[in-house]
Structures are given as structure tokens and as C-alpha cells.
Amino acid sequence: MSCTANGVADAVRAAAAVLAEHRAELIELDRAIGDGDHGENMNRGFTAILSALDSAVPDSPSAVLKLVATTLIAKVGGAAGPLYGTAFLRASTAVGGASELDSDAVVAGLRAALEGVQARGKAVEGDKTMVDALIPAVAAAEQAAGTEGADVAAVLTAAADAAGKGAESTVDLVARKGRASYLGQRSAGHLDPGARSTALLLGALARAAR
Image 1: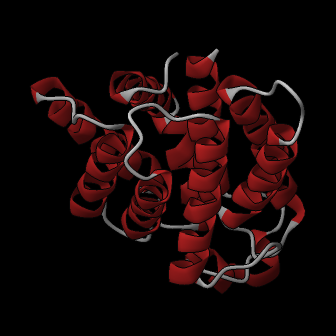
Image 2: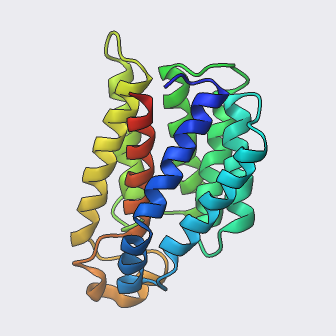
């Protein structure tokens, strides 16, 4: 994909399709250690984003990301709306006013998204949250961007692969944040739904970039 506004909008549409496809899976993951609404909330938020993009695609990549952020904050309840909304809002600011994003801008957006999520949720690696997918994703993206010739697709693919492994690592963790933390040791043995949705999102963006 190109990383123009239309290219970013197409990648967001691809992410919406993946989240809709995995709605039931995310519900089941959240039902095991949370309140069971993560899949429904994410699907509702991204359905609203699709509707907004159908009306008009903003004129810059930053503006597309801001539209995603404000829609998620407005439409998604629980912790996911504010956390994902903050991630996209921080990414929107970080990529600036460029008409087309390059790999450095994508890395800056991912780094800002992680910092925003951590500022809002106060989670660190090992807490069994979406941060366990985001931290390795950002590290992998930064490493990939330092490789000669690395383009946006290579950066996002590295981030997505690392996010997937990070999400899988949450299975063995005991939750220290959110509703899952109420379960204590019983939260171990379950994949964290936020980490899973983060990996799904980055995977969709990476495939769209190829």
C-alpha cells in the first residue's frame, strides 16, 4: 500500500475486517478473564470507523489516524476505547503533517502509541495487557527500520510478528492490571484479549502494507 491518506484508510479498513472476523474469538478470550465485551466493543468501534471513512477520507495520514482515535474514544466502552483511542491519537501527532508516511514515521507513530497506552494505563511488560504485545512490536519495528532498505511493509511486518509472539507470552502470565487481576493465579493459562487484538491489528496493517 502507499502510506498516503487513502492508503492508511485502506489499511484501517483491512484491520476492521480482521477484527470483525475475530470478534467471537476476542469475546471468548475476554469472557475467560474479563467481562466478555472486548470483541464486541472493538467490532463496534471499527464498524463506526468504516462508516466515517465511507463518508469522507481525511486529507492526510495524520488526520485518518485522528479520526480512528476520536471514533474509538466515542464508540468503544470499557478500557479498550480510551487505550486504543490514546494510541491512535498519539500516533496521529507523532507522524506530523506529511502527505505520505515513510518507515521512520511509522516507527515514530508506533513508539508514540506505546507511550500513550502506558501513560494512560500505567501497565508495564509482564502485567498481562496489550502492552505485552506493543513493547516487543515497537522494539522490532525500530530494529527493522535500522536495516538498510527497510520499507514500511518490512517495519510493520516485524512489528506484527513480534506482537504475535508477545501476545502468546501472556498465556503464562498472572494478570496484574484490570479486571483479570481480580482472578490472581487463575488468570494464568489464558491469552490476554487486549494483547491478541493488538497483534491482530498490527498483522492486518502489515498485510495491507505489502
